[in-house]
Length: 378
Ligand SMILES: Nc1ncnc2c1ncn2[C@@H]1O[C@H](COP(=O)(O)OP(=O)(O)O)[C@@H](O)[C@H]1O
Ligand SMILES: [Mg+2]
Image: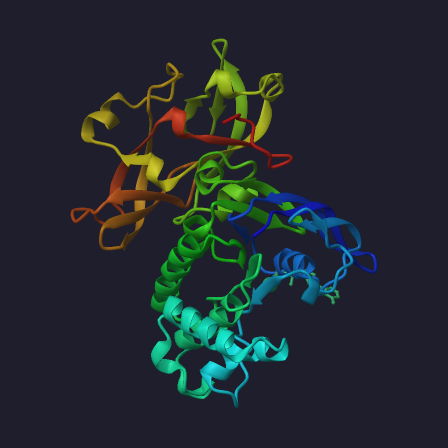
């Protein structure tokens, strides 16, 4: 087992930079997830760690050893791909044993390793089958098993669950999490799926346009996204964004939108953020908006309020999404045409009904309209 350190790693294809200044210290045993939209440089970064891709700048070390110029086979890491990459004419047993046979591992040891991996993954009963006789989930288990028998210092997994249907994906995700707990080997996992990132990662690296936008634990990133991109990428239903401006009202900083004003937490606001009136984007997670009661509507006011008081916004229900345990309402207000509200399950709500939405000022996010960076410290 080993730490993996990326120091200012770059990847360029001609004049095109696809990974920029990636620095990251993956601790021994850690589960790190690279997440971001398609084309943001996740696979390239993983392939550079594996040695399958030359790096254009920077250094990579594994277990204190500089591997920047080492061949993949000399890095002692195992890679698992989305497309399984199994040998179609070999049995599951032979697929698992193949790498060890190539390395001239003694027969008894091969047998023992295959048995161990098959047990770990619950595929003991499939060892005689050929890949075409396996389901997608079973093939992905075999593909994981092939990595497992190598006893690598780290596993690199590139969208390993993306070919599975939704239900199986969740099941395999849990199995992978449990497997990591059991074997304790570092895993670096690439996905475009924010739920996989949130649920599996000890830490998440959110990538966009070849750059790490934020690195942190799932909850650090969820609670304090560094910019609009990260805020919108993690979380379902997605964070709501409302355009407006930061201004001072009666000496207090506030955010003003078309139809409401909300006090800003002064102690978390950088001085620069309020030096002058400036365009900004307010971020509110759907679970931080409450469907207000009748009395909330009665006290609603557009005037400035004390910091800490919830503010009330009048809107209209546009769409009702029942999710079983919870209900998502899509509402419109003068400042936002598409405001998502995550509620406890609701039965007595109708499309086009007027609604009062209340927002707690201490739950809001605020971003610069110009740069997208967060204007509030955690
Ligand atoms: N051989 C290549 N030549 C030029 N551009 C490439 C090459 N391989 C990948 N890219 C580009 O690098 C970017 C990152 O690709 P990739 O790491 O595969 O993204 P992701 O895995 O996040 O979807 C993409 O824009 C892709 O088109
Ligand atoms: Mg990829």
